[in-house]
Amino acid sequence: MKQAKISEAVVRRLPIYLQVLNELHSREIQTVSSQELGVKLDLNPAQIRKDLAYFGEFGRKGIGYDVIYLIEKIRQILKVNQTIKVALVGAGNLGHALCNYNKYSKDNMKITAVFDIHPDKIGTNINNLVVQPMNELTEVVEEQNIRIGIITVPAYEAQNVANQFIAAGVEGILNFAPAILRVPEEVRIHNADFTRELLSLAYYLNHEDDGENEEGDRDESAMD
Amino acid sequence: MKQAKISEAVVRRLPIYLQVLNELHSREIQTVSSQELGVKLDLNPAQIRKDLAYFGEFGRKGIGYDVIYLIEKIRQILKVNQTIKVALVGAGNLGHALCNYNKYSKDNMKITAVFDIHPDKIGTNINNLVVQPMNELTEVVEEQNIRIGIITVPAYEAQNVANQFIAAGVEGILNFAPAILRVPEEVRIHNADFTRELLSLAYYLNHEDDGENEEGDRDESAMD
Image (cartoon, rainbow over all chains, first blue to last red; front, side, top):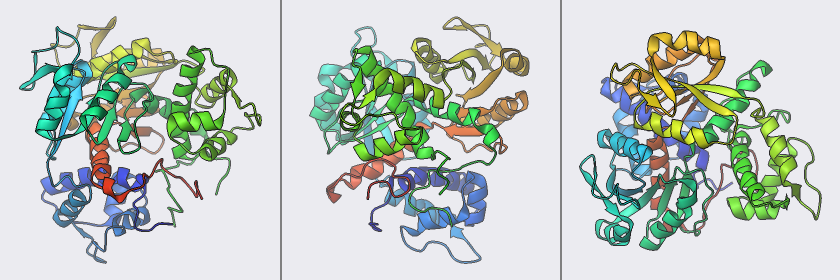
């Protein structure tokens, strides 16, 4: 096992820790134990200690974790202590929702450009961003140093948009379209297709009579 | 390791397999190998064979998997061969986007009721569904036998909506609000907060110079 490499399951839990810690911080709570985090997140405290230990020894026995220090440390690990610019293609309802949410976000990932292919959308405003035509994408991505592209277009347009993002030089893509996209190895793609979430939720509904509740995506030998 | 229990990582991959298989089926392709699926999904073929073997021996050496049979089998495992009704609370942009997408969905999970607390939203139409007031939620959930609730309200309203869904008897919740919700053990909750996806994507951007590309949420000792 490559100890230095952080597993994907851990990386996916870090934003969740960050969310809880931000909430604790907003309530002026200064320290938190792995037990308390475990209750809040429905995760095993041992799992939490293990996850956080990847990045050095943060916690102190009997006292717990310093909330502000842990926030800073996780932000640093996720590299969101720097500003990361994001472009979005697809100015429909979902695109609007994401831009709107992003406006209130406390983190440094900001949607700074919005594009669409449809002439009736181009020139309209979403949260003070003017929707631009696709033929300006490459230039804007370069000029603004945009590193992430969000795709909120219908499935049949998604690969084409991904190709344009990749050609323009984005390093990561967050795809909301219900389509499997091909990207070169150096581009990271995450899928946020909500039907997948619904389908995997269905699995758990129907097995509920199995009794005990399996939690978390136990990477490696997770528990105990 | 409890062999009979399907790990969460596998359950989360099943909808992805289903999506690819549906696409192959729409192109009238009848069989597919784990190698071909692996290329399409950027997953190790051994991982795919292992995942699918959880449910019995589907594939035949040298021929691969029968696409239609595998679709049926996965639908059966996910229990989406039956109709599962879904209610949504929060008729904003995100709620609209989900309802709209759901209209075109081929699977049997259907949003059949939409609610909102804001008087100006109540009585409006989303894809032929009339937005209803929250005080009708319990009755509608019972009458229609709704089993899943989707939450697309702001973070500060989300727990309250979750409580109402739970009181009405839903078995699963898909939460899009950027909030950690508390639910009783018998209710399954999945979070689809897009900022988490963005944050974990940021991690991979900045480590890109590390070279090799780590893929998939390797549950157990997956790759070797």
